[in-house]
Length: 271
Image (cartoon, rainbow, N blue to C red; front, side, top):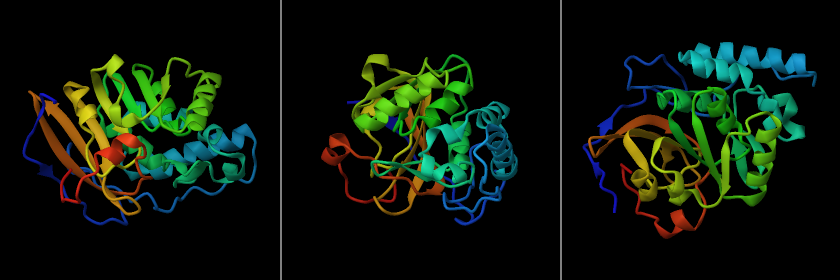
């Protein structure tokens, strides 16, 4: 059993699911649901210059323009080629601000959400970060592009794990550690982690992830019922207590695997 105790929940309410506002204080974030329409036009050309221009416009309009302020995160979002992480049939939508299918019932997340979750973690140089839900490898690439993190990522779908490993290596992110397995149980061999980011939604906070969180570490995770909107939670391990912050509504694919199935809980208002 984890030595970390759950402290009283600190709740911040969203001021409207269909719009975004600039955060009014460091720990309170208000943001758009993942179906927010992009102001960046679809790409009609597959040339690298066209992709680069579309990526820069996306960051300017839909990421920096939506309130993301961390310069390292903005630099990473301007650099990582999202079009390399999606199926060919969706290339014309590579830099639109919405999720896209990547096969096996999974998606690549909305670019704004990738940037926002990365910023929320308040990452520092030399920290060790665990991602649960590698998918295409895009989020892991953004973390690696920051240039000062030790990145670990777990994917339950064998084909996605294999493809992401090859893709990350091909794009020069060969220091990212990729594991195929059930992310519910984390990666204890490399614990503790300074930050854990979860890109699929379970119906509760997995206890093994809490146990693998370092003192002062943070978890960002969507929690809620499958097939519906969830809440994005930030958990911080402070002096052996786990403090929780509700950051608002999101919509993620379900967290799958034996671990989450064996530990399902009755719906409640908190994780």
